[in-house]
Length: 290
Image (cartoon, rainbow, N blue to C red):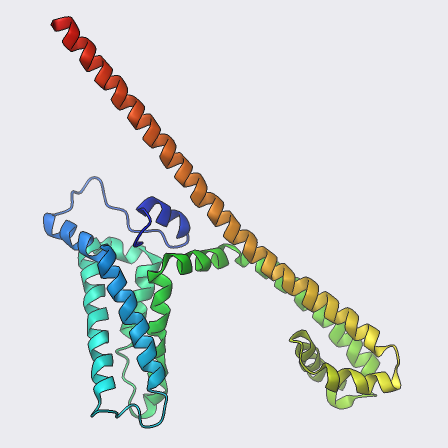
């Protein structure tokens, strides 16, 4: 469901979570058609997005000391009211789509987020109170551009997995090499495989170069070149491959959406051409009978 784009374009951007499609063999009752029109209305969806953003702000404000009890629990009351609205929205969508509601991944995601909000958070389950912040993630299901990014990440998982496997292999080679080369010089950093993994992971994140490399360079002048090679391969090559695969997935989705729009335009042109032909035939028939 989108606010501005046609349903066909939306289904192209949400290939991983297809929209509920009506059953042509079973006509929808009038009340259900009205519910569909309501939940898919632009202003209805914008109101839900506004409430999601407001709820996210309230959850953040409550993290400040003393703010949760401000105004005799006003924030708590507003939070509860928003949860009721979210619940009514999900119920309306279930009524609008029926069993088809459960065939859409985004609908199931919204249902899960709302259901989790009702998990009791008192006593030993106080830690579950943090699950309320999951409501913010409902923006992913309400904003088409965010859904497009999530869909691109989903389609890029095979490529990302392959690159991740390559990174693991490269890191393992360097972990073993660093343990053998620098284990005696800096046992706290490279004394075993675990310490070497942590040190190389810090370098992968661009952290700890000044703490890790200079002590090695004092004993082995060529250590900086070895570590720089690791940095070039792991950071500037592997991580950029992650970005490239994700960008390629986004471009592929845009191309699919453009292709679908082109097909729609072609179909519209054909419909207009058929209308013109029917109109011409009708005029010819009227002329012949006249």
